[in-house]
Structure formats: structure tokens, C-alpha cells
Amino acid sequence: MFEEIKETLTSKEEKKVEYIELIYDLIFVFLIGRNSSFISMIEGGFISSEAFLTYIVCTLVIIQIWNFTNFYINRYGSNGIQEHLLIFVNMFLLYFMGDATRTDWSSYYYYKYNIPWALILINFLICYWLKYREFKDAKPWESLHIICNMILFGAEAAIVLISLPIFSKTGLILSPLAMVFGIIFVLATSKINNLVPVDFGHLSERAMLYVVFTFGEMIIAISGYFEGRVTVQSMYFALMGFLIVVGLFQSYELCYDHLIDRGIITNGIGYMMIHLFLIFALSSITVALEFMREEEVALMPKTLFLTGSFVVYYIFLFLLGIYMKNRMKPSARFIAKIVLILVAFAVLMILFRENPYVNIAVTVALIYGILGILIHAKNSSCGCHE
Image 1: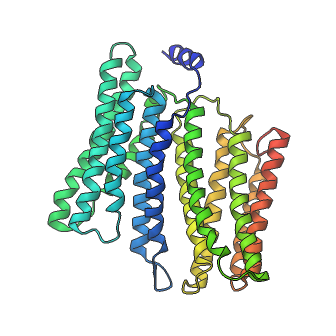
Image 2: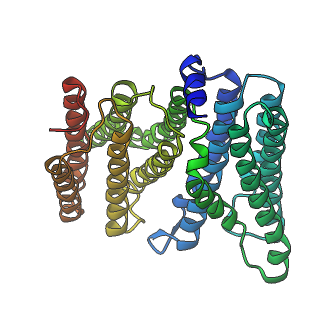
Image 3: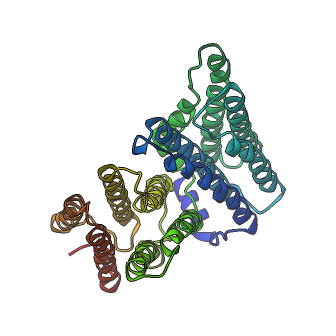
């Protein structure tokens, strides 16, 4: 069986990202903006706990839907009618979810968010059922993988639908349990997912495109640094803000273009999980950069928020080392060096929180210091090792 799987993979041409997938991503640009608006709400000097929790849940739900689509198209897509219908139906339903994404979950908005979500899951279930009918005799191991996905989508849809009458009677919001169940189920069934490895070149490109859209939001956010009169102070912060975006992008671009081994055989789950946190961190950095200009946002919380967002971003960026060329376990010395850099950054950010000139300079120094480490890794052609 495994020989058949290996032969199928090696004889397959690398899958290309189709135009339909790029069109599909445009709805997620809208949804990224909707979700980011939650952490722009200030209450008592910082983000309210309700808004932040809603942001986390809605971001995870949307990324999960996006991931489900990518894995299906990656494994079974042929740019035919079936995936066109899958994508366009999901796009239509996602508009309703986007409009209903609110902190105040009245009955109207709760139904408007969750019914389309359940229908999207049922749409995936139908697509996998059609594939099951096609493969059940020809590829038994692939049938097992498809059945596993049918259980996943059926169970998630059931949880979302059951949450509707419960919310109506009690006001309890239980539909996020479907997203949690999905994450746990996918991780628990990783061995079954290994039976049908992904085209990693295609999947990594799809993840890269989502990251690019997230950077698009960041580019828009720093436009505020260029507003108003042109002074030495305004030019300093505008330049530093621009350098932050460029440095972050270059770090990711260098990993994607030069260090990631896009020819490896994998089920892709770990790679996409890492990107979930990378995208989350980038969205948080975007809002944190806006906060740094707002006087009504309390100084210590916004400094900690910005610092934490950068630390999370770099932790998961270096976790991509699992998928790098000539990958080996990084040395203890290298790990210690990165930890010391991030700890020093956090300490300096807190110490100089009242001095924005030094604060933003420390941030730029961190970004380009780590970029230098990545460039060294590229030039040495041995990943992040010493």
C-alpha cells in the first residue's frame, strides 16, 4: 500500500494554484478586516476581554474553513465543476458569516453566523461523499481517509446546528466547540491523513498567499504613520514603521523561497497549524502598530501586546525549520541564542516603554537581527544550525 502511495506521489506533477483559488481568497481579505476590527475596540485603556475572545474564535473558525478548502483542492481538485461549486457556494455563505461577526451575539446575528457555517460544513461533507463513491473500490486506503473527513464535517455541522436551540433557550454560545472538536479530531487522526499525503508545493504556496493578504492589512495600517505634517519626528516613525513591515515580510519570504523544502512528503497538518499562529501573530502586530500611535490606549498593555505578538511570530517562524532543507534538530546553542534575543527584546521594550523613539528602534533592531540570522542560514545552506 505504501509503495503505491509513494509511486503516485513521485509520478505526479506539482499542482498549480488555480485562478479560482485566488478569487476565493478575496473573501478572506474581507474577513481578515472584519476580525481585526474586534481588537481595535478600546475599553478602559485596552481591548475588552469579550472583543479579544470573539477575535480569537472567529479568526480560528475562518482559518479552519480556509484550511479545509485547501486540503480538499490539494488532494482532489482538478479545476473542474465540483470545486468551482464548492468555492462559490462557500464564498456566498461566508459573506453572511462576515456580516454577522459581532461581539453582541443577538439571536439574529447568532443564527446568521452559524447557519451558513453549518451549510459550509455540509458542503464539504457532500464533496467528500462524492469522492468516496469514486474511490471506494479503486483505492481502499483513500476511502478510509475520506470516511474520516466525512465524520469530521458531519460532527462539526451537528455541533453547530445543535448549538442553535441551546442558544435560543439559554443564551449559551456553544458553536465554537465545533471548531475545537475539528482541531482535536484532525490531530488525533493524523496517521489516517498520512495515507493521502498532500502536494506540499501547492499547500505551502496557498499558506504563503494567506500570509501575503495579512501583510496587506499591515501595509494599510502603517499608512497612519505617514499622515499629517512632514517633520523630522514624523519621518522617523514613518521610516521605522515601513522598515518593520519590510523586515517581517523579508524574513517570511526568505524562509518560503529559499529555506523551505517544498518537495517533502507530509500530510501538511503541522505546516498549516504553524501558519495559523503566524497569521494570528501578524494580525496582532498590525493592530499593535496602530495602538502605538493612540494615546487613549494604556502604555503598558499596548507595549506588552506588541512585544508578545512579535515573540509569537518569531517562535512559529523558526518552527518552520521542521520543513527546511537539510533539516536537523537545531543545536542547544542556537536555541539559547534565539531565546536570549527574544528575552532581551522583551526586557528592552518594557524598560523603554515611555520612550517611543527607543522603543521602535529596538523593534527594528530585533527584526533585522533575526533577518541576518536567516540570511546566514540561507548562505550556509544548512538551515538554522551551527
